[in-house]
Image 1 (cartoon, rainbow, N blue to C red):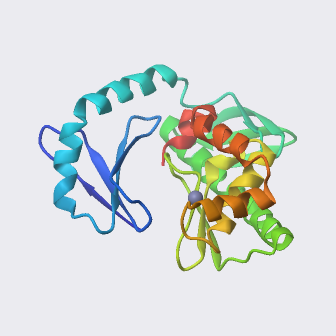
Image 2: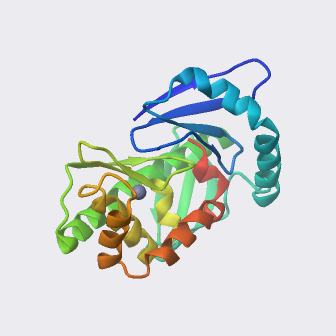
Length: 236
Ligand SMILES: [Zn+2]
């Protein structure tokens, strides 16, 4: 998969994601209103702009819906809660020349020169936490299910919870820390099953079901889940 960014006069800004698995072009609008076009590998890029133009009204309506669903909240949180690990912190913002975060008994002290630096420090802290928590957890689920993978990376994505490449690299969205633990486990099983079946065929879903019988419930949680992620955590 590769990402290409481009802007065209008159059209909403959008990003193209080339997919080896997608069968037709798809449009996605993130909670922040960003537009992504999923482009099947076999379809030429020249079809993208007309496709976006054709769906411009839908894009604008969806962006408005997203803006209503995710009202601009304070961009520096007062509290922080990880559903995945049932951890919670109070945040305190302090002056500091060098941005850093100190964790002291259930509170996070964020030292920075300004709000932007504080937010960046929080985002970096979130990524580090995701590394420490989610990657060992993925290894555990991999051992438990007997499904191996090559490599795992943490990413900050707004439209996807995870992905699995044909070379066996599993990408995990750091925002999974905001999802319930059993749903995180499901997402890991979902990606691990792609190491056997690189598609979403009936055979693939039977494999998933053999490990996670209530997988459909978790799919619903994830489909609605981005709205539970605080806004600052969705910004890269
Ligand atoms: Zn999948």
